[in-house]
Length: 101
Image 1 (spheres, rainbow, N blue to C red):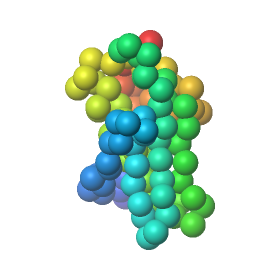
Image 2 (image 1 turned 60 degrees about the horizontal axis):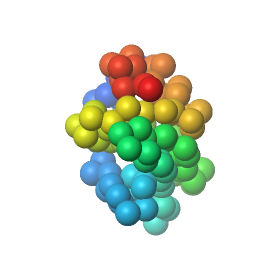
Image 3 (image 1 turned 30 degrees about the vertical axis):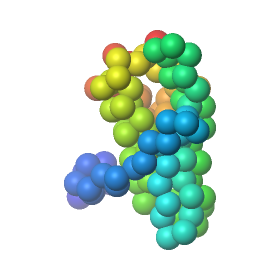
Image 4 (image 1 turned 30 degrees about the horizontal axis):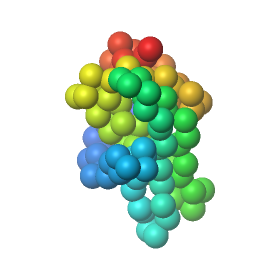
């Protein structure tokens, strides 16, 4: 099974959206992981994805970004992938290309 297939088969985490802080977050084994964004009207700029190396390689960043992009779609937001990880994720998942501002 390829790593992409394993990632697709893995259940998505219940990532929390902290709207007041403009971030999506998850805590894994005591390590705080985030996807930060700014919001200007209906345009969300995804600025930073942070996953500590101690819990890296578990698909956490992908789950954070997927949740952020799905939230953007549901709310009618356009997105600016300023974070290099988010930009790479969108290149690998063209179903999100239509969200890019």
